[in-house]
Each structure stands twice: as C-alpha cells, then as structure tokens.
Length: 303
Length: 234
Image (cartoon, rainbow over all chains, first blue to last red):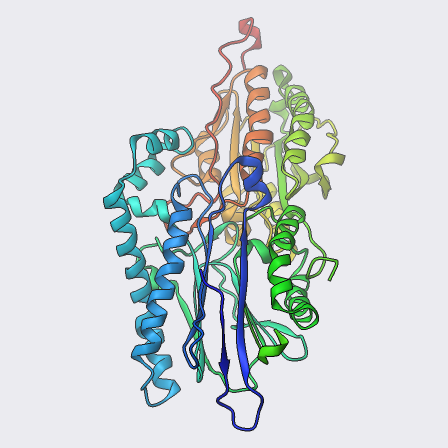
C-alpha cells in the first residue's frame, strides 16, 4: 500500500487539481469477539509522477468457515488489481476513443483479473498446500460434503470479492465482483452509487466471488469520462460499511459527511481518524470487517 | 467532526420464526406441553446468545397451525422481550397454510436487504392435511424464503419425514427426530442457540457453489439416549 498524490493540470485555465488517496481497513467487532482475523484487504497505487494513473482496490474475504484462507485471497485480489490495472492503463492509453477503452475493459478485464487472481492463488497453494491441521480443524466446523468440495477445489479457501477503480486523465474505470459499494460524491455533497442497478444476487450473506466458477461472468465494469468537473470524491467500501447503517440513506449520508470532513479538516486528519471511525461503526453496526478507500480531488494546498 | 460519518447505525435484523404444529395429535402423550416447556426453557439461552452477538437484532415470531394457521406471536419481537404463550392442541395439520403465512412476511418490501438470513424452525408430529406443496412453493418463491435457514424437528414416529425434508430443502441436512421430551428440549435448545449464533454472524460466502448453504450450520446434537420408561416414548 502506498500513499501519495499527483497533480492533474490538464484543464487549461483552471487551478491544478490533485487526487489525494487515503483509506483504512479494520477488523470487525464480531471478528474480534470470535477471534477471527480481518479478512478484508486494501491497496492503492498513487505515484507522484504527473499523469500517472491512480488505482484503488478493496476486497472482502468470505467469512464462512470453509474459506480458511480468505484473508490471503483478499490480499491477493487487491494486488492483482493494482498490477493488472496499471498494465491496462499503459496498454490502452492510445485507444482512439473512450468507447474503445470501455469495450476492452468489459470484454477482457474481468477474465484477466479472475485468471490473474487464480494463478496467484494456485502459486500460493503450490508453495503451501492446505495442511492436515487446517483441514482437521475445518472438519469439526463444516459438513463432510462441504469438506469434499474444498478438497476438490482448494481455491475455494481463498474466496473473496474485489472492487477496484482506475483514474486516469481521461476516464474513471471501476470493476466490481461481489458485494460492496462504489460511491461518487458530487460537489454539493450528494452521494450516489456509481451504477444504479443493484445486483439481485447479493443478499442473505451470499455474494458472487473470485472463486466462483467462471467468476468473470459476475463482474461489472463501468467507465465514465473524467473531465475537470468529475465528482470530487470516489469511495470504495466493503459491505460491512453499508450493512452498518439502519438504512440506505444513512449509508449515502456517510459519503456526504466524509467529503465535508475532507474539506473541513483535510486528508491527513481524516486518514488518522478513519480507523477509529470504522471500528466504532462496525461495533454499533454490522460487526463485520470494514474497508474504505477514498480518492479525493482538490487543489494540492487544500489536502 | 465529532460524530461518526453517516446516519443512524444499527445491528442487522435477524428474524427468527417458530412454526408449531398444534393439531389434535399434539395433545396426546403430553407433546404440546413438552413443546411449550422446551421453548420456554430455551428462551434465556436464546437471549444470552443474542446478548453475546450485539451486531444482530434478533426478532422473534411464532406461527401455530392446526385448522388453518395463525400467528401466535405476530409482531417481530426483540428477543429480550420474547415470552412464550402456551399453545393448545386441536384440529388438523394445515402446515401449507403456515407456509403461506410465512411467505407473506418474507416479501422483499417487508425485509430490508441488509437483514441476516431468517431462521425458520418447523416442529411437527404429523402429516399435512392441506396443500403443503403449494404453501412450500409460495415460501420458496420469496427470495428470503429460499435463503432462510430452515430447521425441522419431527416429534414421534408419525411425523412426515419426507415433508420435513422438503421443507429443509438441502440433502446434507435431515429432520431432527425427537422421540421423547428430553430430545425435544435438546433440539429446540440447539436451534435457538447454536443455529442462532451461526445465523448472527456476518459470514459471507459465494452463492453459486451448489448446494447452497448461506449459513454454516453447526453440528446437530444427538437425540437423548432414552426416557425413563416406555410410557415416555412418543
């Protein structure tokens, strides 16, 4: 994980703007009670060089007992996203139109990300196969049939969601596989999901996953132009955050409040405060792990 | 900013339903009283589990079925306030009607998307006398009905195990068979504590690994070894 900013001064006549990145991942209240680790992961890439792409990624490793290495699966997922989106930005910088980039993103990125994750997981399993100790402990918690499914496909142990965003001078590209939220917060503080259509499959503790068969079918990509007037705040959140609020409006209000806090106190102060806020939110809300990644766009001296 | 970002925070609702057979045969050999006692006895343990999992807001309801079906506890009641009203036996076994009552309450407009999977515990000693399949179909047509944790407890040897298995809808899980009051206490305690505990945790998993189990169910207890006398066997 790295933390840096860069200037975006491509709009003639306007003051230079910069993307400022921060985020936090915290162990959920129920995980602390049960002794389970934080199974979420967070990573970002924000080089200082002008015009370099900004990338953010969060992932939520499944919490059910079968997914005994889901924290590793989540970390693998965010690193795969950073690697692949950097490559994507470099490879498609010369595409003639945003439509062409959008098409490539929709056609290739989901499969490439799922396969890259799968290859990394396979390498991890080759280096450290599921141990007798892990499997024996699991056998006391799941049915023989569930254990048989894991033995047949050990990659299940690493099951995770993945949300990622790539911000370049010309476009904002997001990728989502599984539950969680990607929010845009407008200048006036209004927060909205980047895509309006909710996935009807994602409820009752069940999610699409990187470890699903042909997982790329479930991925959703979204691309929009990134002019100077693009929303000042992009938020990636694992589902433990939205599930902590009594209703959807309360969750969207969090986007507005985070933008207000960034404007009032600046990014370093918010970055310091964020872990405590997320821990308190989990304790009074869902109890789940919570991870947020924020990309904030403003003049460098306003950060 | 002194307060946390966002609106009001809340634990995730977890709706828990008792579905109790009150047909005439439940009045024989003290079965209905054993059921009343077992649930009443389980309440403090259920409340303790809920206290230990404050991120789930457990809300209890109860359906009784015999000649038709009715809510014996209609309002979603916080488990801390849950009191069991004794059920009385009499009539036939309109289990299908109970399924339809549940289906009505599990409609998406009545269940927030952030809810935890509901828990349905069906307890019966007989065979449905109405259109059970149609009722079950209505329940399973509701997304929350399909995703519910469905537990079935058979009382005595006359319970229709095939019907209870269809209610469970999962080949890895079988109806629990209580042939005496002690076993019934044990199974009801398990459903209201261990199952509740599993359902209370935000343990996500992938949805398309068949057959679906969206809550990792704990291992069920064995039936009690045996009653003191043959007269205590159902």
